Image (cartoon, rainbow, N blue to C red; front, side):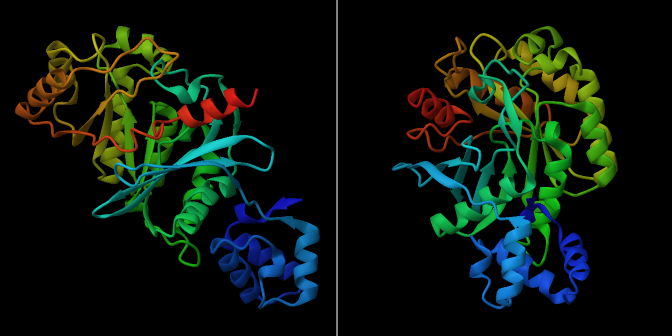
Length: 343
């Protein structure tokens, strides 16, 4: 059976036309789906016959809450969603003064192998469908009762490794007949798949590209991020410059501060040199401790000195506010604990 929620409105319109249904039926169905309808029977403005035929031809994806944790410190909510095949993915809802942001997963597991991330432990299981990404936004909003205004694709998985499905998800979540979340309210994080960054630049979607750089030195970056062996720092930064030239959108560089690895003043000066002349912002991230990793977070003093060197050199740098520290809010932690407990 076909996944109807992964269909774009023109595709649904074409399908209804083949059935001899008027075009407005497709829009009605699309709107119901994007409001969280769990069955075709809930679509009360459709005829019984049409609802029955839809149920014969299509399936509606509806995730289940496997686990939910709410932070007592800052209101952050973390969901572990169980998908139709039993796999689980994480979604985090973060509350800011400018609106509510949902961080979604794009894959079950991850193939990238970054040493500091729990998401990649166990490797890639499978890629998410567009509907399964949309469901994370939609059902997080419905369950929490909090309207979502911003999306970050920064959860489990490498979004650009699932390019076609992510691209379709972006079209779906941006649709005026659906959730209508603007591209400028969406950030996409990548560990540095250069060919896909260049492809994304050509589409000029106006979303924010967040690049997980984490180290300006090729030798060290290759030890903590295997992707660097294929696309080194210079190739990655060239692709970032191309992205800015094509879209006019400033790049956000994610930089996890790892004690004794990438947090020295020498690293800060090398990063400053590499980013000179670019329209960039560096987001310094206090490392989340992963039990299976020997890597440790940098001291506050090291983070402050690193930030100072960048800013004095003309590169804006902020230290990411830590949210949900009491609820395993970093990527992959809750899924891994749940899987371990259910072996």
